[in-house]
Amino acid sequence: MNEIAFPLWAWISFGIFILLMLAVDLGLFNRQAHVPSSKETLFWSVTWVGLALVFNVLIYYYALQYFAAEAATAREQAWDIALKFLTGYVIELSLSVDNLFVFLLIFSYFKVPKNYQHRVLFWGVLGALVIRIIMIFIGAELIDRFGWIIYIFGAFLIYTGIKMFREDEAEIEPDKNPVVRFVTRFIPLTKRYDGDKFFNVENGNRVGTLLLLVLIVVEVTDLIFAVDSIPAIFGITTDRFIVYTSNVFAILGLRTFFFLLVSVVEKFYLLRVGLAFVLTFIGVKMILPLVVWLGAYADGIRDSDQLDYIEEHYGHIPIYIALLVIVGALAFSIVLSVIFPQDKRERIGDVETEIEDDYPERQRK
Figure 1: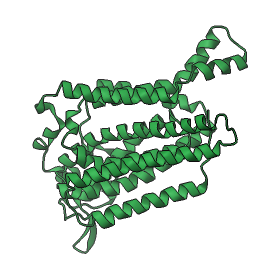
Figure 2: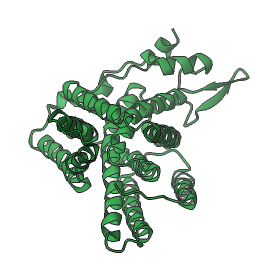
Figure 3: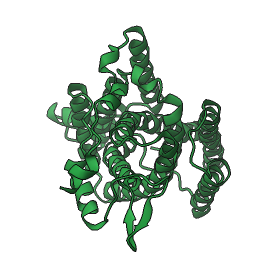
Figure 4: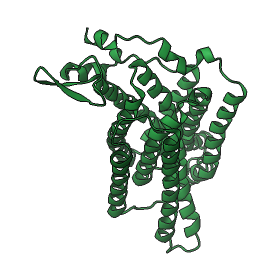
């Protein structure tokens, strides 16, 4: 397995770059709450995907220099590192797309005005970046200390994938979420929106608006999704830098993709099946070395060197094959969704006509 050490300056440079891009986005293009136009969302979607691909090229050339001492294999090793980032990015982006369905339900449930949704997603992204980096370092540290835990992650992904195959999208019931109930016990909330403000002052007291509650629900939702997505990318690589940067680009892309795809995402109803397959496949990829090792041991092989050789050569799916399988599964699910469209009455977009208006009152009871 190729190993590479990204220096501290790479982490700092990446962090500064992301903060600058977010500052430009919020300070220059989105200082006032508004509904992003199709042109604007397309521009930022292409921008974030393009930046991710450029960053992938930079990783390739850095890895090429890093492995230059082994001239015969430097290009092959650099290509492997670059493919890991690309595969991780595709996985995280595709899993993040599943968030779109849930975010649409959340915004519909709370009847969030469209011109305030961008603000919720922006600050939700900042919270997600902090959540992801904490979970990534915890997960990587656990793998470093207890290598066998990767098999637990794999088994969890297989369980999650099978569960997604068998279940429809869960209903949004914030008043039953224990985290939301806990937070709202300590933060007094109003029952209405006040522009794009998260806080307001009423009777001399600082209180949260309904938009703050929406933000809390979005953050909790991302935390739940991170429990699936973080183990999934560890099935591709355990390099903290690659795992985090691919997550960041996927999350930032998601924020703009929401407005670009909100009108068509409901048509790709089979995408959830494709995502379930991806999770299951990555889980199998993670536990395959253990299965191969146990199979060889069951066949009577006891020599440790021979067992390690069998595991190394027959227990690992090449990264390029994993990428092709993942992209193929997602593309196939999208094509099938187009060929066999869902009944309009069953689409997620119709939820808005069925939601109730009294959530704040029910939540306080």
